[in-house]
Image (cartoon, rainbow, N blue to C red; front, top):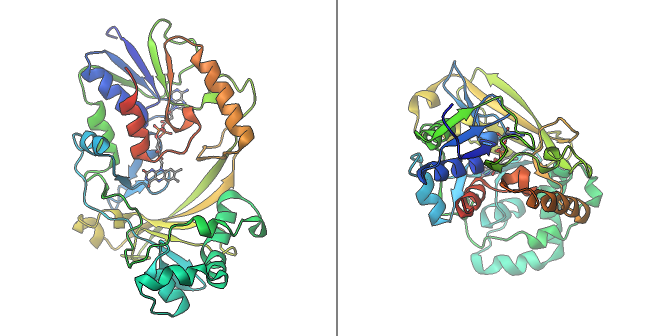
Length: 351
Ligand SMILES: Cc1cc2nc3c(=O)[nH]c(=O)nc-3n(C[C@H](O)[C@H](O)[C@H](O)COP(=O)(O)OP(=O)(O)OC[C@H]3O[C@@H](n4cnc5c(N)ncnc54)[C@H](O)[C@@H]3O)c2cc1C
């Protein structure tokens, strides 16, 4: 192997962005990942029968209002212009999220105008009804807490759109990589200064004297010496159906407490421009079930509370004492990041 000047341990969006920057700055970079393929949780599988791009770790929609990120990522992929819209299925009916005039008027059978919605929502009977229908059950399932323990005050913190805009995200830049997420990662790592080795986990002490950028779990790096950081996990059940279209959109949320899953993803809808895939008489859906996490399970959402954040800080302090080690990404920082935030953080790191 050629001489290396830097190691990137963890080939998710954070690590691959760092690797690219290092290589463009003239370094010889070794990218390693403990998994068999790069991409981290943004990794997709292409279904061989239908060509449908399956988001292996749940739906991923790229969206950002950060121009630096948007300009950087578009060097490695075109986007297809997909705009994310989410339905919520409550009591047998579909409603467009987020909380705005479309949902409120359908739910209450009203014809409120933009100037009327704010005072309507100040009436506690209305906000409570919406909370019970769309937030209580979903939040309870998501975090594994009894429905009665969910604070109704969360509805006051949910921004209400005083218009009919049903675009799920506010960001003006969004979409899905035209040739898929995997091609985005292949392009990011396609540089003569980058070598990639999969199935290679990093351990503290590997590569002495070489700067290491690590984005795996910070507690595992230290062999859990102060204890495990808590996570919420997910289980996915994928099904192939012999119909062209199951639900007519990419994501439907299921907020009702008697439904065990929180969402159904139907992946072909992420590529409406791909007429051949859209026309297939098969579709692939995936049900998402929130789950408790134990060591060895896939960590998805950090469970942030005073105790867990203090524990994460303790590990970060340990890491800061180690020369040539830079920690980042969602697992290293113990922080939920959207993809653009992970990329923005990687673009800010001094290399
Ligand atoms: C269900 C779900 C849906 C999401 N949807 C969206 C969305 O729609 N839009 C959006 O912007 N964001 C979304 N996100 C967030 C997105 O997944 C993250 O922003 C992104 O994965 C963060 O990238 P990362 O590089 O920090 O971490 P990861 O993608 O987790 O990459 C870390 C990599 O490190 C590797 N690794 C771990 N330990 C070691 C080790 N010891 N040695 C070597 N390698 C190691 C792992 O195998 C992994 O490949 C979603 C997250 C979840 C949980």
